[in-house]
Length: 325
Image 1 (cartoon, rainbow, N blue to C red):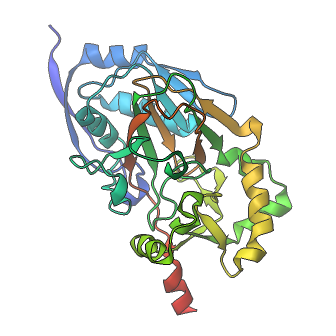
Image 2: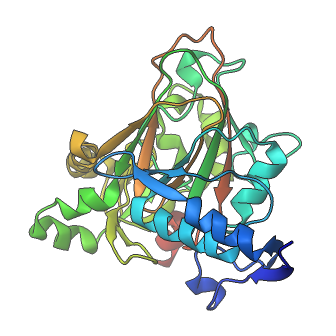
């Protein structure tokens, strides 16, 4: 029988340098098991632009430091990781997510929190009209928050027979394919992100919109963000949540924003994920956007649950900047 030793996962460096958190996670695992897990784990690209499926890996029990390190490296390389055939519980989903950083309690989206597990968001068409299901525009999760999320891990419990896919796009690729002149101009610009810019909220009365904006006041983020791990630059604007550029009106901003929105989702940059039951998909919100497609029979249940890794960057409230000016 192989001897057991206890390891600790403690990422090196100060907290602000480590984008996956600073928790110590106890681990008891044999050397044979550690070697087997790292040997068996392989990665298969999902598209030319982004994404990889993790092969030979089951989400269960403790993870060895070498396994976590390999997953992190692949995550930074591919921006999306897919884990197929993972029939895991809420508790296992949450525990696995914690290996990659502190979890968001989702206080800024209380309507979608699981009642018993605040670190889980319900992504479902249960009890909703088609027109009110969120995520139908391109976006990066929680960019309207002062601390936008680092990553999301979405687990499929029930999916329709056909359709209900999710589209992803590579925002590093979008930046790289801009002209050098456009890159220089955008590098000096910032934009306002606000929850009330979302299309699914249009038509709501002013009181309701004001309430939603009070929970998530408008924030300012750079138009171009450098990834803290890879150094690659990525566009950071979305049609769902970016309303205008700092120092410009909505009308003045619209032409350039619409160009960037369209440029960011060119077909060669996009991966379309066809969900299977028990898929777990993990994506990097710092350098990707995604879009939920509504092309399915809404008499069928689409039920998924998501954890969110807290962000490694803090923006600026728009009203504070306006007051300072």
